[in-house]
Amino acid sequence: MSSHTRPWSSKLPSLHPLTLGTQNLGCDYDTTSQSVAVVREAMDAGVSLHTSHNYNNGQSLNILKLAFREAPSSIPPLIGKIYCYNAAQIRLDVEEILERLPIDSLPVGQLAKNDHREREIVEDIINEGPMFDALCELKDKGLVGHWTFEIFQKFGSDAQKALETFEEINRLSDDLSSSIDEIAIGTSQQSESTEEVAMMVDEAANKAEMISDEISEIAGSSTAAHETLTALSESPATDS
Image 1 (cartoon, rainbow, N blue to C red):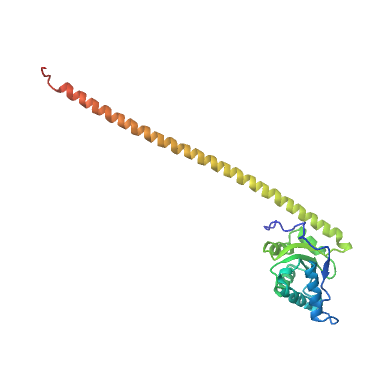
Image 2 (spheres, helix red, strand yellow):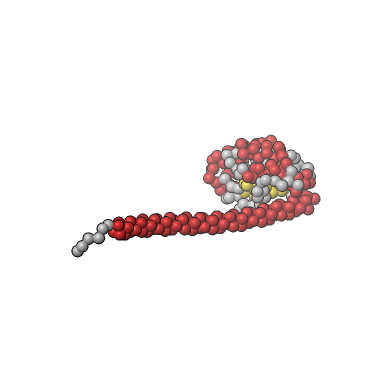
């Protein structure tokens, strides 16, 4: 079982109903300024963006970089296509997007393969293999907010199987968290009871010490009285 927690979320961040695909940004039939203008218009409208490090041989990311630098406060949710051939590829794709764009985290990582044969990644996720660990690691570090699949018809049943597995993992994680909380509460209550007993013992000890002091005082007074009586009895009688 992986040591990572909450590796998958069924809820994506708030996305615009429309998403602008950036595959053709920077093509020969558009100037750089025209492509940047298109992206800026989408940004101003809050439209989500979809990109990949290899779209148009990387030129699409260059266009996005220019647009993002012009309006850093208007960068919309970004979906990045991440190729899932192996764990190293997943990490490299995420790192390249983050290095080339002025962003610290990729809101959504879309797992994909050119041949659309995602059975390997699905099986890896179900069995919590190295690619699963890479997905968890990137999410735990805050480098990717959410993961999703690029789904085609023949891949639909596999994706559903993987998502059901993630839901079960999340359910078990919630159950474990609840159990840990219950144990913590019980331990806390036990600790409080132990502290109360300790306070009672201290209080009893203090009372015992006070009683002992009082007994000592009484004993001292009794001794003094006894000595006085003895002295009176031993002294010669005098006529009045």
